[in-house]
Image (cartoon, rainbow, N blue to C red; front, side, top):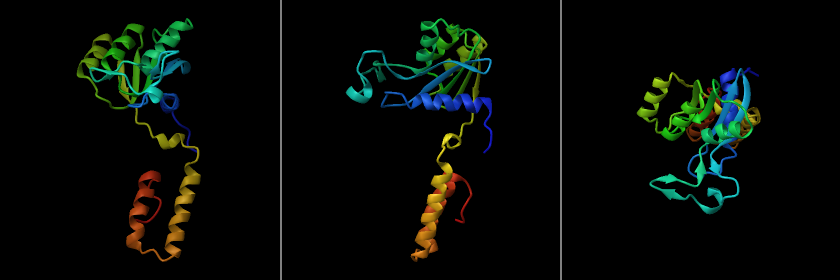
Length: 191
């Protein structure tokens, strides 16, 4: 098994946090790190005690759900709640931060922002990060690296392809399935 980098490790943590999201529009996770140690994490969801979007639907005002707190803000609030300084730390986010989160990140003293996916990247957010001296870096993240069942899934897919071939499926019929397996797992079968 290939060892992942620190950036991939912390980004994987953010993706795991996103699985706790209660937002039905976009699941986002954020991990705050200092000296290669996780100090806080957050995901987008409702405030404690309020209804969740997954239960009640989004409460949308001006095309924004006002029910949720964004992952970055939740992670920074966790630092504040437990007395852990965020100043000088790094943040790993599954998606590029929105403009309000950008402002919060800067004000909290975060020095580096690492994100996995572009999402409505606001040019003014980039300008603010630049003015504040916050380094922003896009991290290529392969979610398959944290799929612990990848080998089992690949074995099943290959077994099914062979079974289809044994049952008389033509190469023309198999080609789209082989191509899909190649997309999901890399160049592993003839297409």
